[in-house]
Image (tube, rainbow, N blue to C red):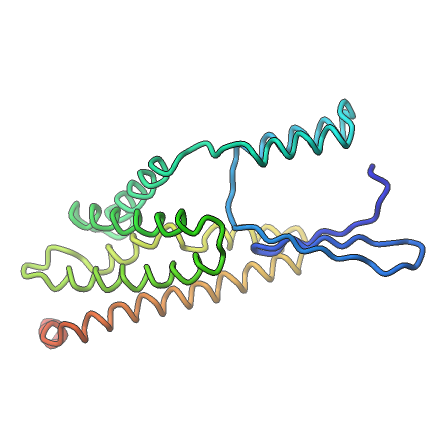
Length: 231
């Protein structure tokens, strides 16, 4: 339609655009780095522009480009307060439903999930900052969950709080994307996302273990008490 030869490779947070030349000139590659995320409202509007330009041909390419720029500049559907509220509800709901936690576990996990969401919002697209701080917050979540688990009476469950607190950064959607890419025979993008999800899960698990071990170092008596209860 646009009379140009191009190849697009969608990786995790990078889009690789390769423009090919049929007259023997070398190809030009461009890399577009954007934070990972999904906006269903903007996706629907983008697909509508695509349909009007390519299929129905009621808009020119220039008019379609202008509409896409307006979509990119459109403010987000939900503000920070709504996002933090949804994060709290997600953590509070998954604790009792997915990990058999109590109401106290759900409220604590909701606060932890809210903290994880706050870090993502503070990053504001800085991939390095968000990637590092997510692991730091995961360590703090695990540390806090283990400390609260040491309270007399065992009111709080470590597994329910630590697992539910990081539920928003689990790479489940990334695994789904990679599986769909592999099913569509897009082996490069699919395998890249699957490998990234596996490595991310390993690092996240290491962060949770590190946070728990730091809590045991801070509370040496609790480790002995826990081992005695296990025996």
